[in-house]
Image 1: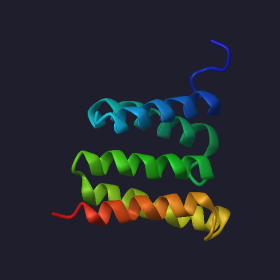
Image 2: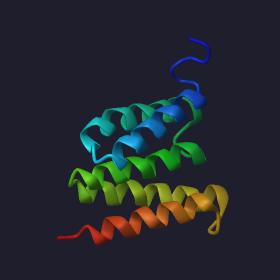
Image 3: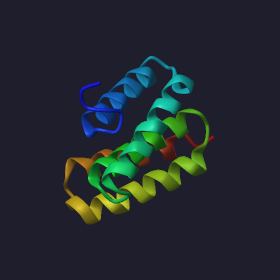
Length: 109
């Protein structure tokens, strides 16, 4: 164990693995990994850190894929608001949040 389970690089790797699982259509497998990474970012960097907010948006995408649309919308809304405050309206993180937000709205039955 070189970096530890709560090091930002380790958490980033967990996020990447969860993303790959999502691309493979395995949201049930991605969920616990994504959740663990989000919890780690919150613990290490704080609730309003851009990396935490980015992972929260990823978490919203996992929730959407599992059918939890209201929870997904709330999560991405919080992430979007925080990213706007932290990095500005035109930052890539904000644009990614907006894309996830749009995706969530397209998921309406």
